[in-house]
Length: 234
Image (tube, rainbow, N blue to C red; front, top):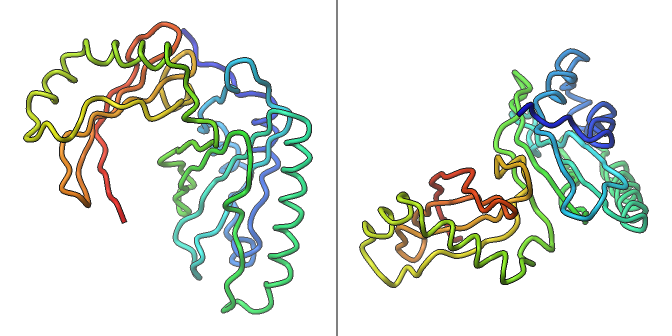
């Protein structure tokens, strides 16, 4: 199966990438070739089931360091027209805050984080190569999963040898069972449809630990991805 093509609104947002003024002032802008390569490497996004993308904004954000060492590619997606208007308004307000505070290089200014959107994607960017790393997804509805879908995902995970082996190796039953964390977009679930993210905590000392993560295609109930992750509580 060939990889899905990028959504037109996502592709347009990446082509018209907004760059934070503090990156511009350091001449840290990808040239057209690098920009095209970065846009091409961004995973193809699919709006959540039954919804559509109405508006998408993309910004290359700075790391609050001079000279900057890394950047963050932020992608904000709106599902409804009123969300699109709100997204534009938030960007205009943030632009004004940055212009107001950007007086001297040694003064800190806001970035484009913490803007409300239906779907938010963040990717760390290596400035020297403009390579994308560590794509993450956020939404305020991510944990809203119907019981039947959650139970199906849990059943699929419990049948896996990796789950059974990890569960048997744990040193404490107090770590609990598998837990549904929330929805995962196809780009992160490595699935044809939206996935359900399930965690099994394998070790935890009260401050840090590890977990085995499973991604389950919510329509086929196929486990499409497995990996280990670290847990840290501030």
